[in-house]
Length: 209
Image (cartoon, rainbow, N blue to C red; front, side, top):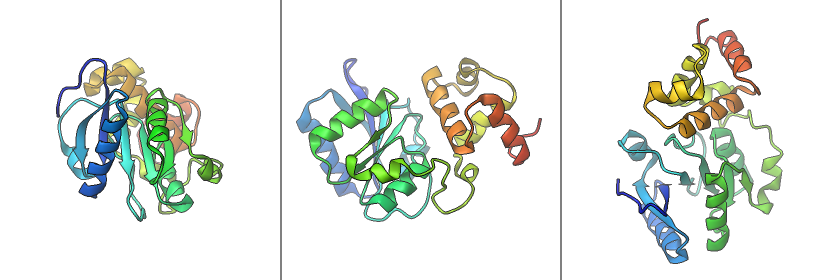
């Protein structure tokens, strides 16, 4: 990965289509809003590569999204989707923001900044997706089945009673990234508190108390 200037926000660009990645990178460059693409590739390539987490992940879901989890790169994910059905799948997979793939450049940049600050963003045309239950899994399976390998690690550490800082130290990640993963685990298990997550995980056989 390339080092970003101190004033830049670090962005990972995920798409199975190299042409789409190139077009999005050019769009962001033309906007000149302080975003630096520090990683670009397919989901498998970026999840297996070594490097520090970006500030946000831009996930182009392609022409048809059928299943799978959002890219697990230690940062919130803004998904680009073709329609409401794909939006529901992306949201269930862990995306924190949804935009249509043909979004205007200005709206895209604004949404990236918002998601990087921890906000949830939905394009007006995807308002019905926003109302859909967050616990819905992309393939109709229980939501806990969509936990990524990293989220399962975090869940195990939650069961040990570790704080976000302790989780970050154990996994060699930032406390911000640890908090992101904890929130994702809570959302996928459909609970509000860490203790509730541990209890529910134990009932589901995900952890042993």
